[in-house]
Figure 1 (tube, rainbow, N blue to C red):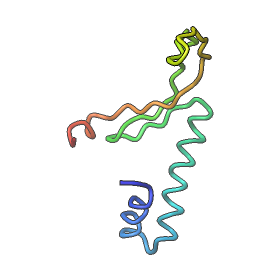
Figure 2 (cartoon, rainbow, N blue to C red):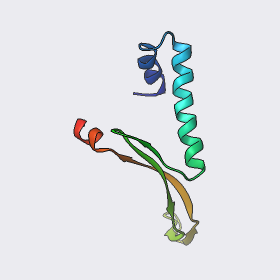
Figure 3 (cartoon, one colour):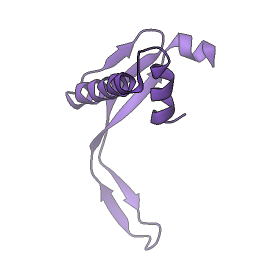
Figure 4 (tube, rainbow, N blue to C red):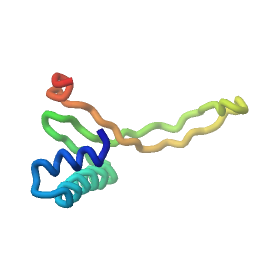
Length: 88
């Protein structure tokens, strides 16, 4: 399922596809904005979106075998809730 398929499923519940697109975009934008603030988003029964910090580390360039430094960065992480785990 992709974003378009999700919009089509939401459109079956709301009055039209335009409103469904706006609803899906709003949910995704809100989650992204909250993660930018390094806060977590918990959807009870579904899961939690949070920001995880990766520490700086050394890596190897596979083509040249040269050791390189990989910078620290923040990455999004999703932890599924128990109800989602049970459903799958």
